[in-house]
Image 1 (cartoon, rainbow over the protein chains, first blue to last red):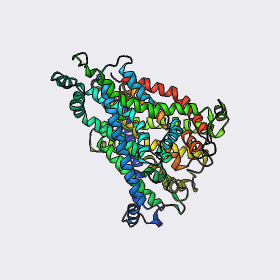
Image 2 (spheres, helix red, strand yellow; image 1 turned 120 degrees about the vertical axis):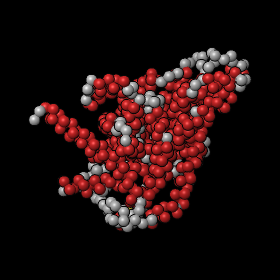
Image 3 (spheres, helix red, strand yellow; image 1 turned 90 degrees about the vertical axis):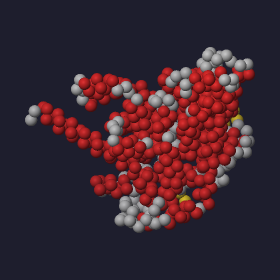
Image 4 (cartoon, rainbow over the protein chains, first blue to last red; image 1 turned 30 degrees about the horizontal axis):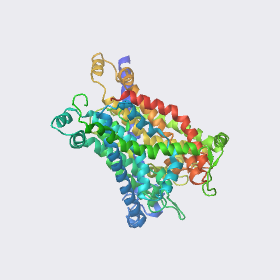
Length: 284
Length: 296
C-alpha cells in the first residue's frame, strides 16, 4: 500500500468520524427539548418511563396541557412574564437609545466617548451576588416587592449597559450624511436623531429590543428574590416544581416547553444579529 | 458630525440631554446599590431580628475566610467555571469549523447549534434533572447497561458538580459556536484561496491560517464566557439546590441563602464583594480587550 492510499484512508475515516461526532452533538442539543416535549404529552404513569416515540411507544394525551393551560397560576405567570419582559426591553431602549446615539455622534469634552461607553459596559460585569442584598432592600423600601415595577427596574439595570453598548455600534454603522443633510435643511440634532437615525437603524434596535426581552424573560434569580405570589413569572413557576405530592414531571415539562418556546423562536428570528450582540460587537 | 456642521446654540445641550437619563438611571440603580452593599459589608445586620445594622469593621471578611461553606462555594464556582469554559470552547470551535460549509444540512445544523443558548435555564435544567434521575432517568438506564448499577448523578457530591458542568456545557457550547463561527465566516477569502493554490490540506489551513486569525476572538469569547459561568445560579438551584449538604453550592447560590434564607445581609454583602474582588482582574481584562476592538 502506497503512502498515498494510506493518506486517503486516514482522511476518509477522519471525515466520517467528524460527521458522526457532529451528528451526536446535534442530537445531544435537541434531546432535552424533545424529551420535555413528549413528557408533557404522557400520562402520569409514563412520566418517568423510557418511552420515546408517540403513537408507537405510548398514546399521547392532552391531559397535562389542558390542566396546565387552565390553571390561573399559569395565566398569571404568563401575563407577568410578557408584561415584565416587554416593559424591560422598552424601558432599556427608551433610556439606552438616546444615550447610545449621543455616544456615537457627539464628542464629549472631558472624557472620551469610548471611555464613557466602556464604563457603562463594565457595569455589566458586576456579579449579581453583589446586588442581591441592595436590590432587595431598595425594592422593599420603595414598596415594590412582588410588583411588576420592582422586577422591571431591576431587569432594566442588567440589560441597559448591554443595550447602550450594542446600539452605539448600530448608530456608528449609519453613514453620517443623511443626518448632516437634515441639519443643513434646518433640522435640529433632535430631529436628526428621531427622524433619521432611529428609523434607519430600526432593524438593529428591534434586535436589541428582542435581546433585552429574552434576557428578562429567562431571568430567574431576581424574580425569585423580588416576588413571591402576585408578580411571579414562568421561570419562577418552573423552578418551584417540587410540590407536596412529589415532582409532577409532566406538569414541569409542559411549563418548561411553555417557557422556552418564546425565547427560542425569537432567537431564530434575530439570529443574524445574535453573534454581534452577544459578542458585544467584537465579531461582526 | 459636529465638526462638519455649525452647531446651533440650543443644540449644544442635546448630547447631554440625550445621555443624562441613562446615566441617572445607572447611578440610581447600579452605582448606588453597589456602593450601599460595599458599606453594608462592614456591618452585621440580621434583617428579621435586628432593627438597625451594627458596625463590625472587617469581621465579616475574617469570618468569610474561615467559613468552609463559602470556601467550598468558591472552589466549586471556579472548578465548574474553568472546566465548562474549556470544554465549551473546544466543542464550539469544532462545530464552527466543521459547519462552515454551504448546504441544507449545514444551515439546519447551524440553527440547531443556537437553540440551547436561548432556552430558559431553569426550564432546561428540569429536563436534565429528569434525565439524570437516579431511579428512572434515561442516563441511568443507559449507564446500568454497562455497569449494572445506577450512578447517583445528582446526589453524589463529586458527580453533582460534574452534572452541573455537563448542563452548562450543553447550554453554552452554543455561545462559543456562535462567536467562533461568526469569526470564521468574517475571515478574508484570499489567504485561504492562496493556501488552496499551494495544495494545503484542510488541517493545515485550520492550523496555520484560521486559528491564528481568529485567536483574538477566541480569547474574548473565552473570557466573556468564563465570567458568565462564574455567576452560575439557575442550574445549580434546580439540579441539586446546592446539595447533597452544600457540596455543590456555588458562590451566588450561597450568597442567596445567606441573604434570603438566613437574612444575614451584612455578611452576604461581604462574601459577594470578596467574590467580586476575585473576578475583578478578569473583568478588567475582558473590558480592555473589548474596548480595544471596537470603534469610536
